[in-house]
Amino acid sequence: MGQTAWGWLTVIYLFLGGLGAGAFLTAAFFELSGWRYERDYSPTCLTGATVSGPMVALGSLLLIFDLGAGKLQPWRILHMFTHFRSVMTWGIWILSIFIPLGLIYGLLELIEVEPFIRGLAQAWLRPKVRSCRRLVAIVGSIFAVGTAVHTGVLISAVGPAVPLWSQPLLPFLPVPLLPVLFLILAISTGLGLSFDLTATIALRGIHEQTRSLRSVQVRIMSLIRIILISLETVLITLLFISALNAGGAAAESARLVLYGSFSVVFWVGVVLIGLVCPFLIYAYVIGVGHQPLLLGLISGLGVMIAGLSLRYLIIAAGIPAFL
Image (cartoon, rainbow, N blue to C red; front, side):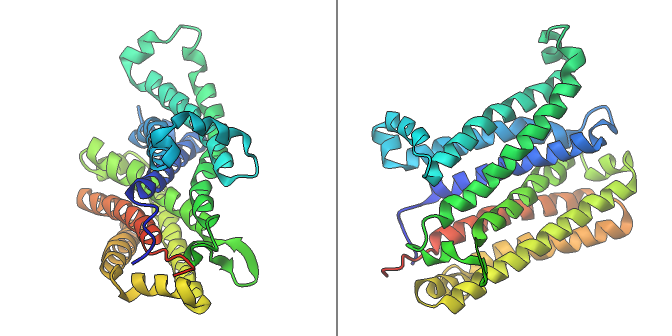
């Protein structure tokens, strides 16, 4: 078995933090590309904008309560804002900026699509909503990337205490692999939630949405997701090859995932459900130019399951060096 100090609350924080950041980036991409205005409203933008702030806030709250001080002396969390050499301090500042930006972005999206909220907005604000939303999308995207990357930095900073978490991106490149992997996972799950899953449910079939868009846009989105899945596959492979070559606790962690007690979760939950099935679906969508209802649900859920499962495996299979 792996380490037991960090459990499900940490896993859920990593998942929600990445998911919220990825959803924001998805909405921002649609906003800045102009795809947001191809129809009366965009369920992709509406979801990405409105869930990003609350998801990251909830994940951060869970992480705080996972800390001993968070449960017994929550006011001690304030001291973390001043330790600028600490990875946790970097994260707190990034989250403290990104969460309000996410909430503002969601409000700006709701002002335009919800009549009641639009009616509450002052007359001077309504004409400026689009320009304000674009500004928030640009600035927020920087902190969304920071949020996604930090979820990996937080884990890799624990190394070399847990060698699996501190594996380098390449043997000759002293850059930790997990921050890059978690950024790709964040974008992938954000797309899965905002574009595949939510748009499918909101419009009773994503094919209804894609018929109103040019098929080239559908193919571009599918190609982006194929690239993301390919990058995930390469990074996961590098992680476990590096861990096996490192020997010791890192190799034992890799063996737990690849053919040990966690192997079913990895090969079924991550590889089959989260990589192979979505890859085949997106390849099919590129060919036909639209994505049917069932395939949209399968790909969206698959990507989400893989994102949660992989984070769980990395945390649960991390064996401390002294063991």
